[in-house]
Image (cartoon, rainbow, N blue to C red; front, side):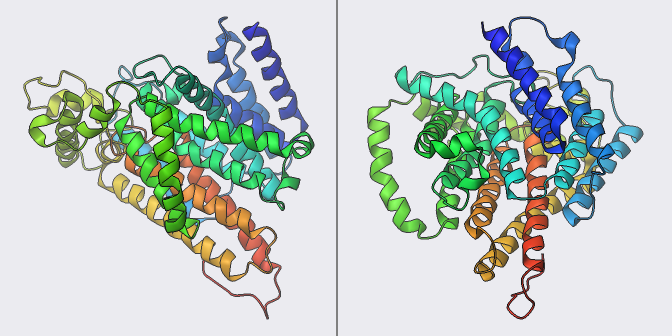
Amino acid sequence: MRDVVVLIIILLFLIIAFRDSIGGMIAYWWFAIFRPQDWVYMDLTSFRFPMIATLLFFIPSMLRGKYPTLKDSIAVLMVIFYLLMLLSNTVNGCSDIYQVIEPILYMFLLLFAVFLSVSVIENKQHLIYLIAIVGLSLGFYAGKAGISAIIGGGYSSYGSSNMGGIFSGSNAFAMGSGILLFFLIFIYQQCSNSNSKKLFPKYLVIHPKLFSIAMLLIVIGTIFNIITLSSRGSAIATLLALVLLFMLNGKWFKKALLMVPLLAIAFTVVPLPEGYEQRIKSAFADEENLDASAASRPHFWQVATTMTKSYPIGVGPGCFREYYDLFDHSNGQYKRARDVHSSHFQVLAELGYLGIITWVLLFSFTYLRLFKLRGLVKANEKYIDNPIFYTQLCNAIICSITVYLIGGSLYSLAFNDLIWLNFGITIILTKLIKGEISSIPTSVQKPSKV
């Protein structure tokens, strides 16, 4: 029965992809994040549905005159990052014996999709479709898993089989849940924004309260899913990002005080997974009391630093494991061909010094841009249509990137769809906000460089 339902949904999304470029974009990102082929028992690999969805997005969009746009400084940095991947791979590189994905081709298609999405999206409705399809593709699964854990009395999902692809494994699934949690919160916020209701499909507008309740359950379930996966880095990163969201939304201190009793009641009613408190505390233990997982990471990071000294332009994308044994001086204490366990040290080792500089600039430019956009919207909110939409989405992307920036310090996820999509959404926000600002009479417009 599940196979039949999933196949019907797959066909519906492919039909949507034929309609227009927005339909093609929605289908592409649904296949990229949700990976429906992993939800059926039969083998669908021979049908190559993800490839079909990709072609239905790329080719018709370009035939309609939509091409990837590179007019933004953030987009230029993204291209420079990719060129550095090509450079390190050409000069050094490795075999694909330890690679889960082929980074060069994977990142080319990903960046092409991100830049094409920037070109295709022309208004807030298109943008909220992108946010919703990406957020709910993972949020549905994460929320369902979290609600099931709550009903089940707070069991642990650590080490269990989760989604495939970029979310395979407890840490990656928790990290993805934390990053997209703020997409889900943004969608929930728009349920109470009267100016945003027109952006949703008609059948959702008819039942706004039911949709709002459903989104709230998914948000709560996603938060608890991160807890049940016992991923320390993702849990800490998500908590800090939630605090940041309170601060960005204004009157954060009063809101934080209101949340304290609610959280206290929640943790009393819903038990945490057994051993969860000890696992979180272990992340802050002194060196002698660190568990094997936490204690090994500084060693891997030191190996990455030493590796970069010998290979200043990087060993090549996805090649850290293959070079690891050459620079491991622990006599195999942490086994062979280990992962670097940090997105930032991954970029340092695999793309070298120029790579890590570009990486830092990408985050710096994006953060600065989002805060400038918030200021620009606030300065011209009387003349912008639905300014709350823009402000809340800027807040959501800031927090989403923060989860990645902090949590990514502990997991190797540099070639991950979500962080690059966040860079792309920042470019889209810039385009839409600047478009609305340009229509404001010069006499009342409050300029700001973006």
